[in-house]
Length: 248
Image (cartoon, rainbow, N blue to C red; front, side, top):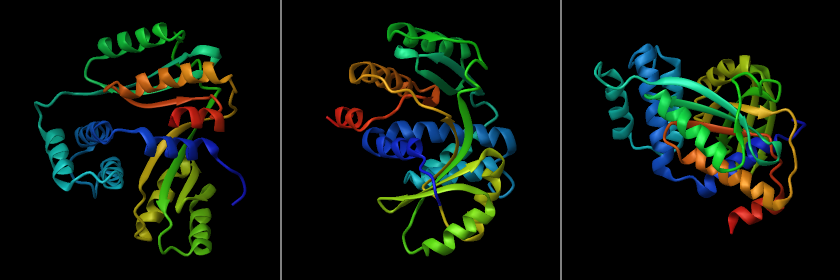
């Protein structure tokens, strides 16, 4: 398909380079727990849990860890989580959108505000960045033995907007409303994605000088290290120069 969603490719590359497996597991476990509390422990009747389990498998989480997370979510005495979002601006006017899952919103917002303040940004009001980001479904699928032409046709029929192939990995982008149909089509084809999630994709990006961009990425990394933060999105252009600097 035409087009190139550089954002999702960069996120996948950077994630593969610097994400700590334990941090990934903790976020997936929290997602499984919330999904179970929301709609029960049976993935056959709980689409959100089914998706969380698929992401756990894509991250090579052991089956025992997945089962413990499901059991934890089934425990009526387990902590209850609240899902919330935060929006603000980083150095250079870069928009930052955070998705959080927390058992203590006061702790989370206090941390978020302090991170923004420490790194030259500011916390904004919810809804203030809605015009900057589109919510899209993003799937990553190993090409493996798939017939690329046939697979692309199936994905287009299911609602895919864009399909890229890089380093043996297919990145499929959908409109938010087509996320479910594409997920169901993958299940029908017995294709297991490495990851499947709704992401917030910037409509346009802003390029900063290298030093300013590195400061923004430091703030992004601080957010990503916080246990309450599930996902961090921004609208800064990830230049080749910045990628090289981050790899060092």
